[in-house]
Image (tube, rainbow, N blue to C red; front, side, top):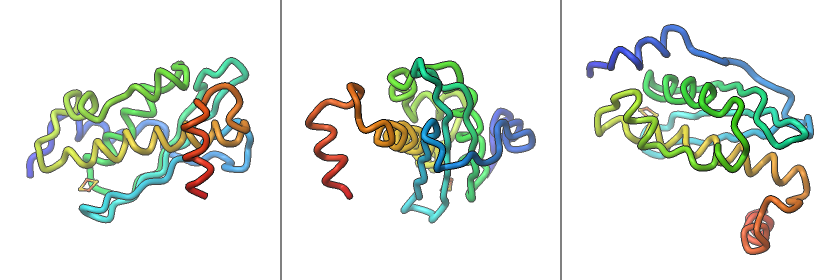
Length: 143
Ligand code: FES
């Protein structure tokens, strides 16, 4: 399998590798696994009082495409609002990294991880005003 130059570049120089304190109320943590291959991605965001993502970190136990996808996404979310971060699509990641069809699920992992991180952050804030009532009900039902 030939990786694109962009994947190799991120793989060799991953941005924002690391961890944040998941108990920090300003940090949202998303941990997701890919059923297709068993790879796991953890993505964390640090959100300021204005609802802007100030920092992002990731740790990925997975293939080169998954590492590149999470590295790229941490760059993309910085400076974005939570709402903007939620609109990131795996197809944008796949396009940017020129992922072949068999590697599309790696970019899905990154989209799912950022969504999970935003949801975790929102839950910590008590769901105030950011989640619609129906959405909150389903989040609570999941626990
Ligand atoms: Fe599964 Fe890439 S092969 S995340």
